[in-house]
Length: 263
Image (cartoon, rainbow, N blue to C red; front, side, top):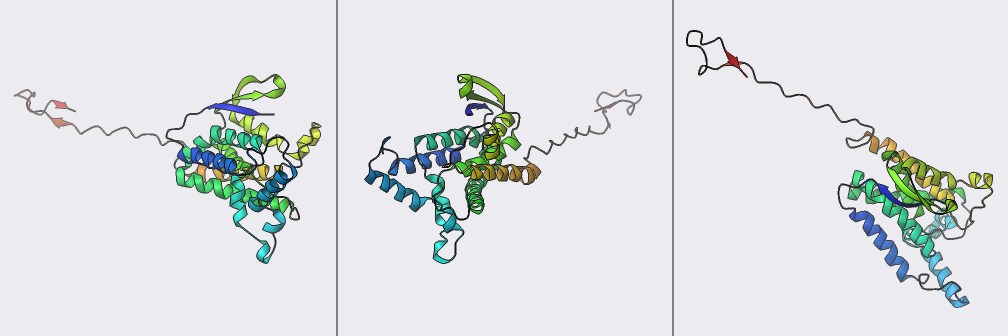
């Protein structure tokens, strides 16, 4: 229901990590069995797709299990696996528009760690919300939601151009807090029920909500307190101290050599 297409918020340096993450997600998707399966795959292809998702996806019941049933590595591989073209393109669109500015503020290494840890944290949050679930959780949505939460704190008034389907895709320019705040509200199952829109059972909305909240809190509590954070106003420059008055013997009156002073 919210399709951002551009933000008027240029970064000050190249967003190599954001572009690298987008490329990595696309390459992983194209190398998997889902990219070219078609709209109606046969039984053999469908079985191969399911095996792929279960192998690389994060399964809550296993993440919170004991012993050998507690694999941690799928938490990270699941961030680069998508269940279809719309799933992939939607995630990469949000990452492309909002990721560069968060990377610009954090720096490349910090931003990469923030993205990966945020994605892992949102995956575990979803697992704790449904610890008996046996279906695989895949996609970069949790990590990207963390980026969105940080963006809305760092740049709440940045202008974002978006398309709204029910308004015939008319471009609208609104502040980031309205776009991303609206996106956040749409992830809440309670709101979906209120407006009579049934959320898809295949979408891990709690991973989106938890990732967004984690990113917002991190930006408010950590980034905002740093020297480059938005909550800190720039220090006022101290005016230079004028040099002391010194006698200028060259231009002084010979009869009064100490009577004229110049800066």
